[in-house]
Length: 217
Image 1 (cartoon, one colour):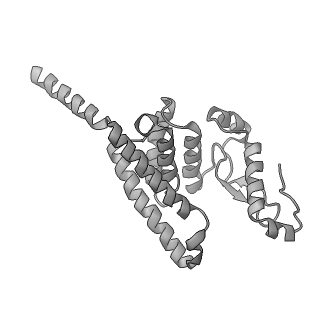
Image 2 (image 1 turned 90 degrees about the horizontal axis):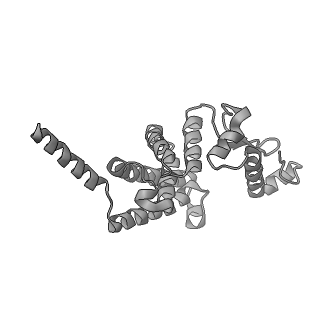
Image 3 (image 1 turned 180 degrees about the horizontal axis):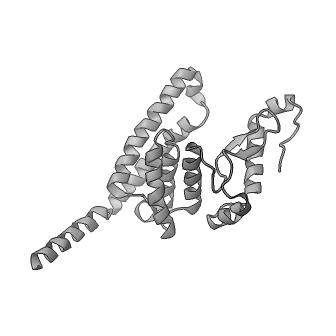
C-alpha cells in the first residue's frame, strides 16, 4: 500500500512540475505567440505592402502556409500545456493564443478541442469570455449551425450592405442577455459598428449603388 501511495505522490509531483512554467519559459511563450500573431494578421487580412504584388494563387499559397505552420505550433503548445490562459502567459499572451486558434478554420476538430478546454478556463476566470464567444460562434458557423452570440458575420452586399449573423441565431430572443454575460456589447451596436466598417471599406461601390451612408439597424 505504501509503495502505491509513494508512486502516486511522485506522479503528482512530476505532473505539477511539468505544468509549472518558469518566468523565462513564460516569456519565451509570450514572445513566440506574439511573433506568430504578427504573421497571422498579415495572412488573415487583405494583401498589404509587398503582398499586393502576389497573384491570387500565390497569396492563397502564402495564407495556407502561415495557417498550417501556426496550427502545428499551436497544437504542440496545447498538447504540452493545455489551454494557455492568463496564469500561464498573461492576458495578452492568452489572447494571442486564442486568436491563432480562431483563424484555424481548416482544422475544425482542433478548434473544437480548444473550445472545450477554454470553457473550463473561462469558468475559472482564467480566459477572456468574449474570446470564447467568438470561438464558439466560429465553430458553429463553420459547421453550418446557428450561432449563440452572433459574432460571425456576412454582409448583404447586393442590397443594403448590412452586417448579419452568418447562418443565423439559435436564440435571438435571449442573444443580448447571453452577450452581456460574456462581456459583449448589445448585438445591434455590434452589427452597426461592423456595417459602418464594411461600408467604409467598400464606400465607392455602395455609393454607385445609391447607398450614400451605412444602412444601420
